[in-house]
Image: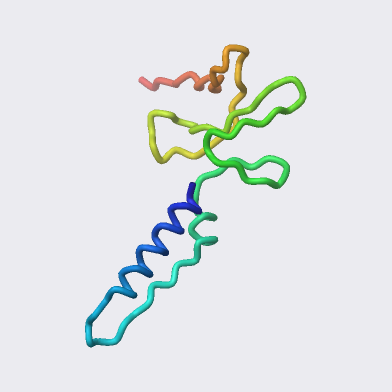
Length: 100
């Protein structure tokens, strides 16, 4: 996903630079697609990077790469177990402590 975004940005910058008809000095945008993709969110297993939505089978259970906090778009990704109906099993939240 992030590689596609980096490619689109690179092509858009290249298109802007090549279509420029200004008489001033032209500048070129240099974007390192690998650097952009390394900053993206991903799940890791067995030294391999997986994107959001990836499923892997480990022994008798399946793991899903999903948002740690689904209510937040920029949440980090974690591996979640999948139940027999295909639903992600989120970890239980710790009980809160109240102070008087």
